[in-house]
Structure formats: structure tokens, C-alpha cells
Length: 283
Image (cartoon, rainbow, N blue to C red):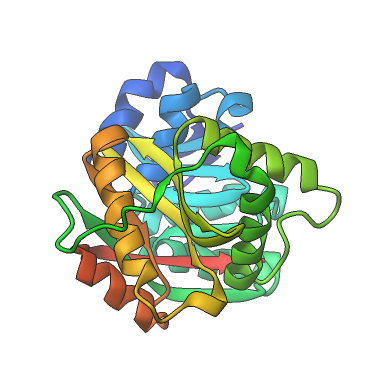
């Protein structure tokens, strides 16, 4: 079923639209890394990409994309296409646990949907989007390495602690412990988890959560609270950048809360620069 706007309409993206979708995603591979990674993994199949891809189409073809999964992620939307997407989403009600994406698009879409969906738990309206596409500007930590399956007993609790501190809820609540552990194990198996472990303590960790079009997106950066203030995040991220650029993708990106001044300073010290701003709406 299509929802007609003033010009154009919203419908599910099909395999026939895949080339056009990839063109839109390629226009900003850093900002669109997450959705690009989903499409690269499974095309437009909802089961394989973990959500639905909605497109706004007019006479010229595909104009904008909205990924609708656990996260709601806008791609190349405009005021008109966001209004059309919001009309479509009001029909089904909220199914996502968060919105995330370019700040202006994400916040405007939330403005349109909040009256129907109710208040958010938290709105993070400024999250600098940062990237580095060259070697780090500081030495890496030689003790940071790719994690192995033998690290999972220590790594999973660290990932849970990071998630709770960052998001405010537990990723294993509601009987999701097995699924969460499986997801971490998958990232480890893919060579996308990086750790420094000493004396059975995870000193530093980070994961690459998305990869597409020459860009990888780092997430879950964490230093044990008892060991903070010693430069582990700087040297650890320098090692992550080096290994990720060599083995995963030449451009490494991430986004960070604007109020986390220590993290922003650390990333700048490593050589990251700002490429835009994200926003996140949490439920």
C-alpha cells in the first residue's frame, strides 16, 4: 500500500530499486554506513537485513530511504519526504527502540512522529560524526589485539556494562542474554572486536559494527572505569584504526555524544575529524 504525498509516494524498496538505493547510499558513505552495511549483507530482504526499507519515489525515481528495524534510520530525506514517511509510520505505530542518523533529518522526523508515538526516554540531539581515512597521528597500544572466542567470558560482561552506561538499559533484559552473547560472538568471529585484556580484566575494547562502501563504523568503545585517565582510549583507538584500516575498510568512522568531551578530545588526538552531526532518540 502506498501513501501518496503532494508529489511522489512511499512504498517498500524492491530488488528492482537496489541500484538506485546504492546510489543514494554512496552519496555519503560515512553518514550512511549502517544502512549500506545492511543492504550489502542482504539486499532488500527484511529477514536478512533486520528490517524494512521504505523508499520515497517521485517521477525522477528513488529520492529518499528510511530503514525501519530496531533502529529507524533516515537516508537523504527532505522535509517533504519526511512528512510522507511520517504519514506511513503513524499507521503502524512505533516498533523501533531508537531513531538514529543525521541530526537534522532524525530530529525533524521525530518532531513529526512524537505527537502520535508519545515521548522519548531520551533525545541526544548533537552527536558529532567523526572519521579518519589515514594512519593515526599517535602510536597505538601494542597490547590491543583482535578478540578471540576464548575472550568471550570476559568480553560479554564488559559489553553489557558499556551498553548500560551508554544507553541506560541492559541489552540482556527480557531474556535476551543468549541472543546478545551470540551477537558478540559473531562480531568476534568476523574479526571486528578489539581488546586489551590483562589479568582477566578488559582494559579496553571496541567493535566494528558496520562495514560498507569503504567505511567501517566503530562502536562500543570502553575503558574499564578503574583504569580511565591513563590514555588507554587514545592508544587503544589508534590501534583499532590501524588494524581496521588494514583488515576491514580504509575509512574508520564513529559518532560520539557532544557532552563526552574526553572522548571527543581522544578521537581528535588519534586523528579523527568531524564530518557532520548525528542525533539519537531513545525509547
